[in-house]
Image (cartoon, rainbow, N blue to C red; front, side, top):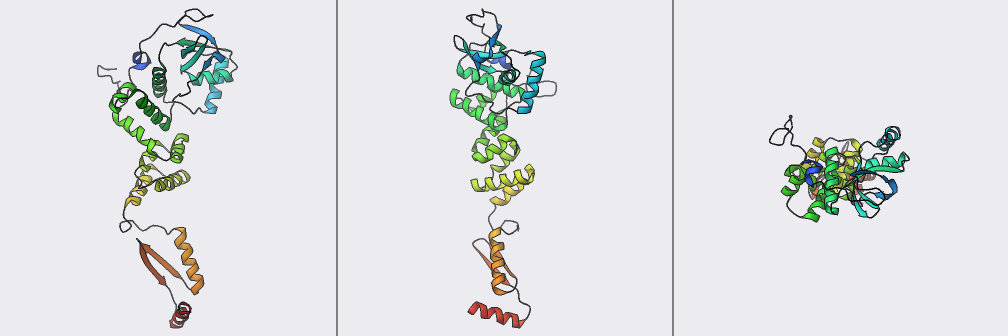
Length: 292
């Protein structure tokens, strides 16, 4: 780490670390456990934050961690805050807490931090960002909660969590996506890049159509950007595209009615109808049908 706060690869370190964000406080005396900084706590007395930034946990990864805990125990203690005389709320370590339950552990090592609920939430966010445990939507929702709770600008928030302002701004923009598209990003069906590209669509319906197609066909971010640009052009400027189902159905109905091939060329509010005929007798027959 150089004096500018960057590592040897030139990347800015994430924040100032958990300990630097909030001054360390000695663990308060715990009835039945003494005043030690780290102690073993019954697992049922620890509960996750209701507003924990991370909401999704990979089941297979949890099972692997549980197997490791069965074999070696929990090496790194959970960080908690006291919410009652014998009750604690998790700040950091919910994944270990969940895996310990699977492993059948009755107690877990904990260290107590004397911080407010708001500070606990920010600590939990930074801890998850450091571990890259959050999906893009969870990150965006956590940033928005911090802005709503503590106020300040996006620049100030970026400084607190050790990110650039552009990174924070881009993350928050994802909250403008329709809920269905946010779910796709949350579940990994679409990437953060797909989400940002979809924000350029002209309306919500266009976003939904393109998002579903991207998920179904595995389209790249660049392809989505190209499709979004096309949707934003005026009808006269758009490149020729495959006819939609309604136009194809209309052509088929006309063809059956007239007994020949018909084509509908739709542009803007109007268009033209092309009817094919093989000879003049066929043309007379078509005219008779139209005049009937």
